[in-house]
Image (cartoon, one colour):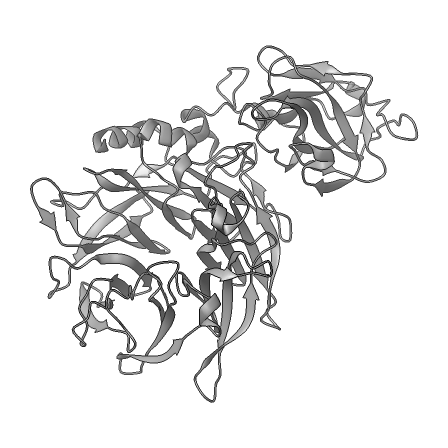
Length: 574
C-alpha cells in the first residue's frame, strides 16, 4: 500500500494529498494522532505489533521544508523508562519548543495505571525529555491523557473520560519561571450525575478552557453533549463555568471534537444512531464566535455535508484554520472542507469532498479519522489495515490555482478525477466563469452538486450571455431563476437544495423550461433585454449586477420526486 501511495505523490500536483514518509527503520504504521504548530509537526503511534515483534510507542518530530514542499522526519521522542505495555502516543500537542505526549497506561506514584503526560523541550539541536506529569486525583485505568491542549505555559489534560458513560475531570498544569510544571487546579463538572464523559476533549482559548461533556442530559431528558466554558478566578485560582454551548441541533455526541483559532471555535457533532439516545440525527459541525469584550460565545453557523445519504458519518472530527473549517466523515473515507470567502460571510462547502478521489485510489485509508490544520497546512491520518496500522498524509491548504472558487487546487481536482471538466478541454469548466460564485449547491441524487456557470460575454451590446448547468440526472426538467439580491433559504420549499437568491425581484424563466441531456447538462442563452421579473420583463443596463441559480426536478433517495438547486453566480454586466 505504501508504494502505491508513494507513486501517487509523484504523479499528482503538489496540492494533492501526499503521503508522509514514515521514520526509517520503524516497522509499523504511524500517525494515529498528530499535532501541528506552523511548520512543525509531531506524529505519534502507540505500541505497535506486527507478526514478528512489538514496538514501543513513540512520537516523531517532522519539520516542513518550503522549498521542496515536503515534511521531513528529524527525530523520535522515546521515553527512557517506557515499559513495553505503555500506550504512549494517545494524545499529543506542540507549541513552539515544547511537546507534550500522553501515556494513558502509565503507572503513577500511587502504583495505579492512571496515565501520564511527558514534556519534551527543544534546546535548538535536540529534543530533551523533561518532566512526566501525573494527576493528583488519578485512579486505575483512569485515562489521564486521553485529551490535552498546550498553550504557552498552560496545559489542560482530560482525566477519567475514557468511556463516555463515566464522569471525568480536567487537570490544569502551569509552568513556573524555573521551567517546572505543577498541577494548579482540577476542573470538575458542577452536576456530575448529568455530565458523563467530562473531559473527553479539552481546548485552551486564551483566558478560557473549553471542556466537552458527552452524554449530558438535555431539556428533553435525552443525552445531549455540550461544551462548557471555564474562566479562572484570579483570587482563588479556581476555574468556574461561565457558559454552556450546545448548538442549534445538539445531541449526545455534540463536542466529539473541538478546534480553536483565536475567537473562533469549531465543534464536531457526530450522528446520533442509537435509539436510546433519541431519534437518529445527521452529523454536523458548528462554528461559534466569541465576543472579545464580553468573552461570550454564540453560534455563527451550522455546517452539514450536503449529502443526500441518511447516514454519512459527517462530524467525526473537526479542524479550524482561519477562514477554513475541515470536517471528517471517517466511514465515508472523506474529509470535507468549508471556506469563508470574506469576513462575516457564511462558510461555503466545497462542492467536492477533499479526499474523495484520493481515498478511492489510496484504498481503505479512513482519512476523516483524525487531522489537524494550521498555517495553511493540513495533516491527516487514517487507519489502513491490521497489518499496516495508520498512515499519514499532508495537504497544503492554500490552492495554487482555484479559478472555480471551491477552495481546492484545480490541477489536483482534475488529477483526482473530479467531474469538473465536462467538455473535456483539460480545464475546469467554471474557469471561464464571467461572474462570481456566491454559494455552492447540496448533493443531488447523483451524489454531487449541480454546477452553474456563465460564459460568452458580459457586455450587454454583444447579446451573447449564456449559462450552463451540469451534474444533474439525465432528462430532468428545470428552469433558471434570476434576482438582483442575494439571500439564503436552506431546503427552500421542501426541496433538497438551498435558495441563494432572494428579495421581491426573483424572476423565473418558466417559459424556457429546459430538459437535461443524457449527460445531465443544459445550455441556454439569456436574453438581457427581457429578464423576467414579477412586475414584468426588465432590460439589463451596463453596471447592473444580477444573480442566477438553476432549479430542477430530482429524485429522493429510495424514490419519490423532489427538486433541488444549483450553486449560484453573480454577474456584473458591462
